[in-house]
Image (cartoon, rainbow, N blue to C red; front, side, top):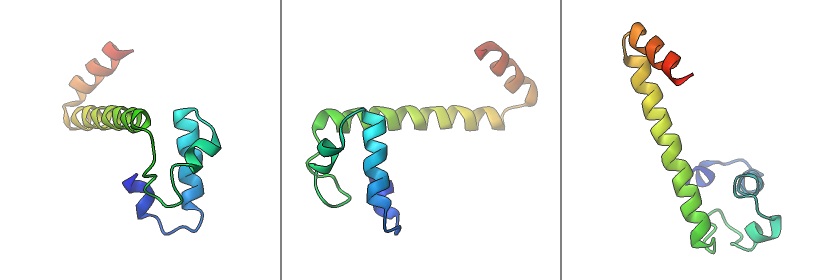
Length: 84
């Protein structure tokens, strides 16, 4: 939720709530019940874990993509053709 805290946009909390609703596939009231600030302190542990797993997957994917970009073009082509 650090990302949500960084914004100065007046409607950013609303954007975070909508994102959490979409990602976690839960209702608006559930997310709103987690607190009125950007920390969502009352978020259930299961949802924190789900978001943690998603963040880990994103970081791993980004790391793999970055490593491929730094590789030689032939290695990248081979990796991409193998993945497809």
